[in-house]
Image (tube, rainbow, N blue to C red; front, side, top):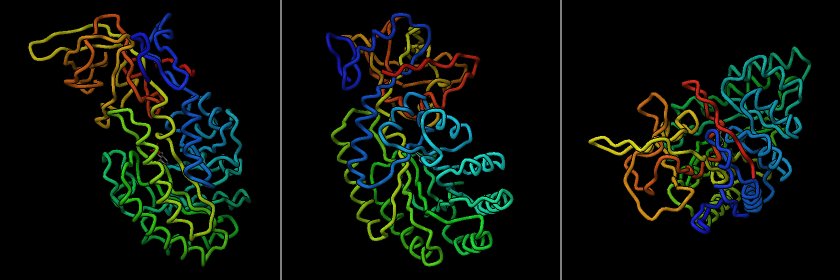
Length: 391
Ligand SMILES: Cc1ncc(COP(=O)(O)O)c(C=O)c1O
C-alpha cells in the first residue's frame, strides 16, 4: 500500500481505497485479487512440483476461491460447509484435502460419496469411524495420517498445533495401532499420505526442520507396510509480518522454507503437498472502518470505530497487532486506543498506539486483514457482518 496525493492506495494496481467509501454503510473487507495471484505464483515457483491446497478457512470468499482455483490451487477444508463452498466455486472433489479433528459421521459419509482426494485423519477413533463407514458404503477412503511430532515452533499458544498437549494430529507412539487399524480395514481404507501441520505464523524453521526429520522416518517405515503411501503433506503455517510491510523479506523467508522442505523431503521420492492460508491472503485484504467518536477520559483517548472484535477478532484473540492507517494522510499524530462498539473490554484493535490524529467521520484501514478476518467474523451484539469487496 502507499499514499498517492495523500490518499491510501492498495495493491499492485494501486486502488484508491477512499473511492470504496462513497456509499459507506458498514465496515468493508477489501481483497486484492491481483495480489493473491502474485503470492500464489511466488509460492508455486518456490515450492516447485508441490501441489498447493489453499487452506480456505483463512478466507472462503467465493471470488477469492475462484481466483485461486484458476491459479491452479486445490483446497484444504475442515468442514462439510467448506467442501460445499469449494465445490460451488469451481473445485472438484479431486482438488480437496479434508482436515479437522471433529469430522462427524454425516460429514465423512458425504466426503466419501464425493470421493474426496484425501482425508487427513486426526485420531484413531476417527480412522476406525472412516473405516466402518467406508465399509458400509462399499467405498475405499484415501487416507493421510496427520502426525503430531511434538515440536514447538514458538508461535502464539493459540495457533500452535504440533505439540503433544495440542488436540491436533496423532502421537508417533500410536503408529503401530494405526497400522493395525489400517490393515483390519484393508478393503475400505487406503493409506495414501502422511500429513503435518505445526501451527501458524511460522517465521523461523528450527522446529519445522526437526519435525520433517521425525516424520520422514515414520513415512519410510510406513511405506514398507503400505506401498500405496505416496504423498507427504507438509501443511501450512508460513508466517507474515503484521508490524511492517516487507514483502522482499517475506519472499526470502519463503525461499528458506522451500529449500528446507524440498531438500529434506526429496529422498522420499513421493508427491509433495502443502496447505498455506495466511501467506497467500494475509496482506491481500484490509478492513475499512469509520471513526464514530473520539472519547477522552482522564487516562486515555479512545478512537471508537464501527468495526469491532466481531468483525476482526485477531487482536482480541491472539494479541495480534495490525497496522492501522487513515485513508486520508494526516500531518499530526496522537496516542490512542482504537476500539469497537462491542460490549467487551477485549474489543480493541490497538492499545496506546501512535497513529494519525483522526476525527469523527474519518476512515481507517486495518491492514493485513485478508486472512482469518471475515472467516472468523460473527454477529455478536447483533451487529451486521461486514461487507466484502474484491478488486
Ligand atoms: C490443517 C491446517 N492446514 C493449514 C492451515 C493453514 O495455516 P496458515 O494459514 O497459517 O498457512 C491450518 C490453519 O489453521 C490448518 O489447521
